Image (tube, rainbow, N blue to C red):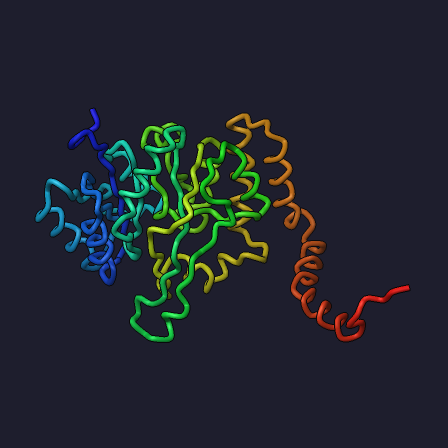
Length: 318
């Protein structure tokens, strides 16, 4: 039975962490600051070696009715996907929400998204935009850098599967941030949670590919979380080490696309638009020289346009 207070469904908040001593307390306090209070918080340790383990244990000891500490056997490090799945396995809530240990929620996050879920009972997932958060440093110049990460998905609309998956593979939309969604736990259990072969990069992309394939998703116009931008984040490290580049081919992206092909086959997906979009995504790896030419052309196209305007500033009329 789902635990309830005043007929309000319990929400399980899952925060995974690995050596997050700098930020984890701020993340936890943003959960305690929620205007909706029927939640439980699972602090799931991915084998930390700094003081974040002690911090999490202190919160679990101080607030045993609200906070639980969970870890892998023998304090192993098993990656982001396996650690989120451990949280899902231990969740009691009817709904699940994820918060990374270096990010924060705004106070109305749970209240607003639960209200949206109730007003759209056919929705399996409620999603919103995210603020790219630079101003956490306190530096005046960083305040100007804060901005909303657009999903390129029309808001205030319910999307039926697999429409968003085709658009994702066509690179016409972005996936939401993991900390920006509220999801029905029953649905997550049916799709098997996160893909554990993806320990870091593309773990969120693989997860949302599964969600987009099968979930009805309502997209909100607002944002309820702040995605901290810092040099030690998994995305920043991947970009510095060359594991991720949005406009270049790379082995990690190819592995992700090959996984999607296997997953679609496994799920016996017949949707032609999804398959066509996937084939288009694989084309750069099948024809790398052509892709390099197209990539180079896209980079110089704005310069060519400016040159044309200087040479032919007005349209020729006959």
